[in-house]
Image (cartoon, rainbow, N blue to C red; front, side, top):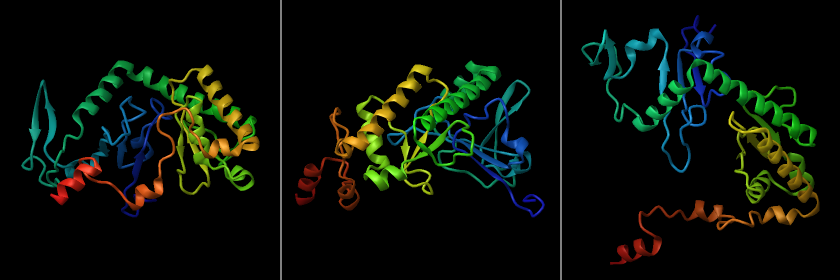
Length: 266
C-alpha cells in the first residue's frame, strides 16, 4: 500500500536480537534500515560513545547513496565517485562512520556465522520470554500482557507508584545495590513508570533467576520500607544526582568549574 502510493518504508533497527538469522527487513518490504551495532553486534554503547549505526538501502535507492562508495570488481576494489553515481546525494563528512566499531561488529558476525547468529536470536528470545514469565508470576504487571516477549519486554510500576509512592527510578536505583545494572527506565514514554528489560542471549539461567529474586525482594521492601528505595543506592560511591540542578545549572566547561571561573575572571 505504501509503495503503491509512492512512499518508502524505513526500518528502525534499534537492535535485531530477535530476528537474526530468521528474517530480513528487505524481505519485509523495507527500503531503508539502520542497524545500531550495540547489543546485537557486541559493540559498546553509552558514556557518550563510541557508537555506530550503519544504514542499508534497497536496490532502487542505491543510485542515491552518498559517495565515495567502495565497489568490488573481480579481485580488486575501487572507489565510486560522483562520476560513477551521478544521482548521488553527494559527500558526507565522516562518511565511514566509526571504523573501529564497524570492524568489531564485522569480526563478531564473521566469527559466529549464519548458524551462530541464529542461535543469538534464539537465546535472546528465550531469555526474554523466561524472564517475562518469571516476573509476571512474581506479581509484576506487564505493560502489554497479551504480547509475547521478543528480545525485550516492559514492566509498569504504576500501581506501586500510586499506592506506595515508589517509582520506577527508585526500583532501578535499588537494583544497583543488588549488583544488577538497572534496565532502561521511562522508555517508551507512553508507558507510565516503566522498566524496559532486555536480558540478551548471554545471560545464564542463574543470572536471570537472581535478577527475579532481586526485583522480588525490592518489591517487598517497597511495601515495608519505601524510604529505603527513595534513598537508594546505598552501597555505591555515587548516589542520587541532583538532576534538577544539572538541568538548570549545566556545567559545560572543559575544565572543572573553579578553573573555568578563574580563567574567565582573569
